Image (cartoon, rainbow, N blue to C red; front, side, top):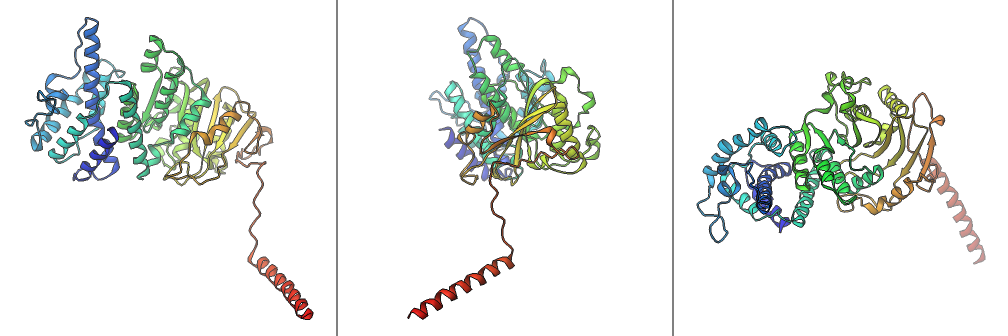
Length: 483
C-alpha cells in the first residue's frame, strides 16, 4: 500500500505548478508525511501513558493536530467532506500552520528534543504545493498510511530510502544525497562501532551512514533501557549545509526510529580547525563528502592545507575532529591517491603521519549511479603513523548501473579478507617506507593483476597484415602448383 501511495502522490505533485522535479516531490511529501507520523507517534505515547495511569500532554495544540485540520473524521472513519480544501486549506497551511510550527525552535527546552526539530524543519521549509486541491489530495493519500507497528515503520523507512535513491538517480547532484546502501553496510561492518561510541558524519546528506549505523547497533545485542537512551540521544551526530538534504536527513532518521536526531543545519567547512577542542571530537566518523565541489578563499582559510577541493577540506576536518584511537571510513575520489598538486601531496603526508591508513577499498566505475567518477574508501585510525596499507580492488564481471547496482555479495570477499589483510588476486599491501616520499603516491596498482596487452600502433598492424598476405600468397601458390 505504501509504495502505491507514494506513486499516487508523485502523480498529484507532477500536476502542480509549484513542484517541478523529483527533489520538490520528496520535499513536499516529507513535511506532510512528518506531520502524519508525528500524530501517530503522539497517539502511541498517549495510549502508553494511559496504560500506566499517567497523562500525556500532546506537543501539538488541538487546533493544529492532524485530525483537526488535515483529516477530521466522520463516524465511518472517512475524512469529513467539510474538511479544508482549495484556497482555505492553502491559507491555513501558509498563514497559520507553518508559523505555529516554526515557533517550536524558539520555545523548545534544548536542541536534542523533538520540539526543537519540529521548529527547525518548518523554519527551513515552505509549502510549494500551489493548489489547495492538490494539497487536499496529497493529505488524503498520506492519511491512509499508518506508522503504529514496527513492521509499518520498517516498511515506510525503506520506501523513503527508495525515494531518496530515485531522487539521486534523477540527477541534479544526486550523488550528494545517496550513497549505495550495500556499500554503507559493508563499511559499517568493517568499522564495527559499538554502543557507547559517538558516530559523526559532517557531510550528512540523507543520513544514510547514520541510519545504517543505528540499525547495525540496534541489532548488535539485546538492548537495555540505558542502551536505547544512548542510541536516541548520545550516539549519532551530523552536519549538513543544504536545506533540502538537511530536511531529508532529519526525516530519514525519524522514520528509522531516532526521534530527535542530532543533526545541525550548518556549513561544516566554515568551522576553523584551530577551534576544535577535545570535547568536540568523535569516536567514529563515517562519511561521503561531496565530489568535485569548490570552496571560496575565506573558507579555505580555516584549514592549514589550502585547497579549493571540498573533499580535501572535509578530509582535513575529519582527521582533526576524530578522537585519538578513533576509527574512520571516508569515501573519496580515487584521484586523491595520486594527484601531484602541493595540497594533495601535503594531505596524503598528513593522513599517513597522523593516522594509520590500514585499508583502501578501490571501487569500480558506476558504483555511484549518475556520478561518473571512480572512488575509494579510506579506512583509518587516529593516533599512530601508517606503516603499511592494505589495498583491495573490487573487480566485478559486470558493469554497474541503475539496473545492475552494487550489492553486499559483491563485497563479501573484501569483508572476509580485510580481517586478516591477506594477499589475494584482488588484494595486496604496500609498505610506506617503499613509497616515493616526495609525492606519497598511493595509486591502487594491483601487482597481482595481469596487464592487458597494449594496443599496437597502426603501422605495426599494417606490417603484420602484409606478412599475413605474403604467407597467404605462398600457400595459394603451393596449392596451384599441386593442381
